[in-house]
Structure formats: structure tokens, C-alpha cells
Image (tube, rainbow, N blue to C red; front, side, top):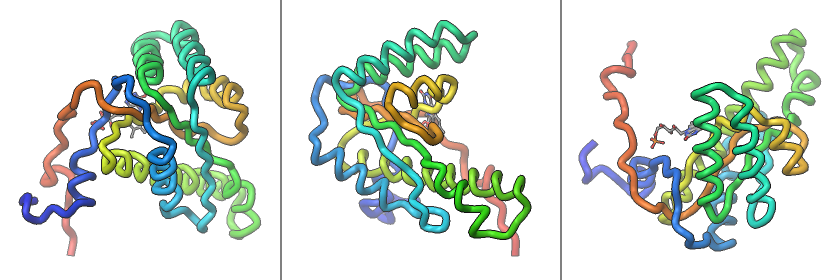
Length: 202
Ligand SMILES: Cc1cc2nc3c(=O)[nH]c(=O)nc-3n(C[C@H](O)[C@H](O)[C@H](O)COP(=O)(O)O)c2cc1C
């Protein structure tokens, strides 16, 4: 893609990088709401919008950091290392957003579609996760467009029940995303060339 082809949206998609350490600068409530509006604008299976966002700051964020670093010791490497890294990212961010699937689509899916119960569960759970993943990606791109950095932390799945308890949430753990201003920019890992991953059939 030549740089002359790049509009603002593409530029932000290309510029997004996982950043794991942040400066002390706070992220304004207005920017958090803009980021969450972008997330909420994502497509969702059956338009179920089966996501919830928990904005974690202050004392609660400190409790989340303690929980993640304490539970890290219960796991062998590399999980323990990744959990410790995640706790440091959350600690260094001024605000962290947790994304939770409500389970609404899974609950109502079997009523909406006349398919086998086991297939229905897999189908709607997958649709719900894919919908929330679209919301998380919107969040990351919106943050990038505001000059704000993020990292998608999936490793907290290992302690998902504890995380949900701490946040007072039911449903299914989806992601935890620290949000802040990068302490240093990262160029990130290179992506595979398209020739490796694209096949054309006609
Ligand atoms: C579903 C998912 C889970 C991830 N979980 C973690 C994680 O637990 N810890 C972490 O440091 N990065 C995590 N990442 C970020 C990836 O490591 C990162 O996206 C990848 O290395 C590519 O780098 P980039 O985001 O800078 O392009 C996750 C990304 C995704 C999409």
C-alpha cells in the first residue's frame, strides 16, 4: 500500500501497536467515552450488542494489580511471566478497561434458531466472542486515533473468575485493556507478508 493511498482510518489501523508501559498522564473521561462509543459501534451477531465495559481506576485498579501479581505465582512459566507483565501494564496505566460478554446471545440463541442444542451453544458463544472482539478492536483503533496507547491482555483469562468477582461482574471474561500514553513508542513485531496469507480463488 503506498502512503498516498492511506486515509486517516487506514493510517490509524496501520499505526496501532501494543504498548505495555505508560506515562503518568491521565486519560480524560471524555476520551474514555469516545473510545467506548467506538467499541459500542461495532457490529454484533443478531445485533445483540452482548458486551459490557468496566472502566477500572484508582483503588479498584490497585486491587486488580495485586490480584494478578498474586495469582501469577500459581502458574508455571510462561503464564506466570505473562501475568506479571500484565500486572505491570495495568499498574502503569492510568485507566484499564475490562470487556465482558453478557451471555445474552447464548441464552437467547436457542430460542431464536432451531438448531441442535450443542451446536447452538458453540455457535452463539463463538458469535458472542467474535462480536466482542470487534468491539475491542474498535476500542484499540479509536484510542490510536486519539494518540492513546493500549494493549489487549488475554492472559487474565487464566484467572477470569477472580477478575469477574473483583469487578462485580457476571458473564464471560473477554479482555482487559490498559489505556494510557506510551512511555515509549513501539514499532511492534512485523506482520507476515500478504503473499503468505492470502489465496485468491476464482
Ligand atoms: C486475543 C489477544 C490476546 C492478547 N493477549 C496478550 C497478553 O495477555 N499480553 C500481552 O502482552 N499482549 C497480548 N496481546 C497482544 C499481542 O501480543 C500483540 O497484538 C501481538 O504481539 C502483535 O503486536 P501488535 O499489537 O503491536 O501489532 C493479545 C492480543 C490479542 C489479539
